[in-house]
Image 1 (cartoon, helix red, strand yellow):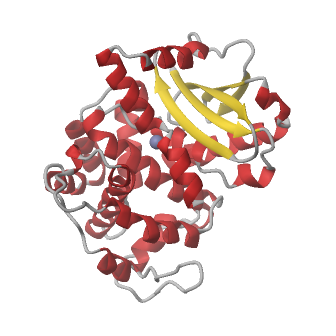
Image 2 (cartoon, protein in one colour; image 1 turned 90 degrees about the horizontal axis):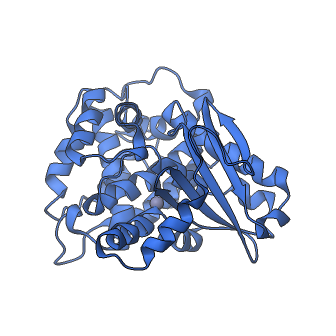
Length: 337
Ligand SMILES: [Zn+2]
């Protein structure tokens, strides 16, 4: 899981967009890749004629499956696309774009490989899938969910890729756990294992200055976790980051638009009645901040190895940890803590 995540994420939106944005400014050959990638963009509100069409909560997904990927049983691919879209739609209370084209590219071997999300005259998600991919591999896939989460946040520019990638990294696990597609212990195990990758190294500056892969993805995810906990602490665990992200999508329209990070965070905070997002951004944007992760895990009741050890139900923030990843079917009025 970890190896494939590194492999896949390294090829996904942040890197792709960083390259494309730089290319657009510098005029290098990567711009041609963007044009080619966008060649399958739907016109108006309709899918290209050769696309398989999916309707998910009022949105339209157009799947273009290339010749090598035609070897994969169609039903298997369609089930994966629909499930991924429903996971993201349930998290955001709607699918985060009215229309998106999915370009499914077949490669050798099995598994799901890198993805990227592009906005160039229309929203396009590209994902590479091994021709021998199994139903089990598709059921456990995180790549397509990660890319679809990118649709819910405006393009914030190169300096703020850490928030774009951090959100996609953080929300993927939670959205899948809430849907029942991923084991809750597995999500916390990955957070516990990978969040340290997001801590600043000696001599590094703030989040807006980072170019480091680990800090972009997992430092961004840590910002999200800290914000989620702060919002829940300040609202008696009534609401969390999910409420802020739904408002940001609703008011900005998501990735189809460009956005200003200060405005995006202000919208999120207004939705929760806190200043958690803006406060943490103010502290971390220009200065390296290394929170005490061990203390955070202890307060949340996350054991050293959540896959084999029980969570601490008596931890001071146990109710917050439970509320973050609780299955949707079990959600009810949250208890205080
Ligand atoms: Zn990404």
